[in-house]
Image 1 (tube, rainbow, N blue to C red):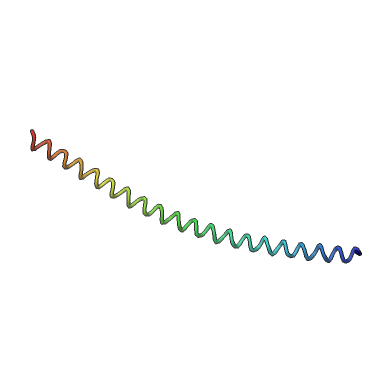
Image 2: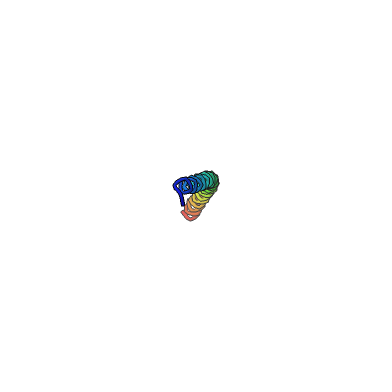
Length: 72
């Protein structure tokens, strides 16, 4: 194999590696975007659940105070 053939082969391998890295970067960008969207949805759901739990806690406390007043 001549030096020119080796250089050509090396160039082809370099181009293939470059394309693979570009595809990898594109895939990673898509995965990051999907993860950010998923995290935003989870955060929104978690916030709603916290609101419901706080409302339930306040309701329970109000009922407890009402029972104490009725018993007292």
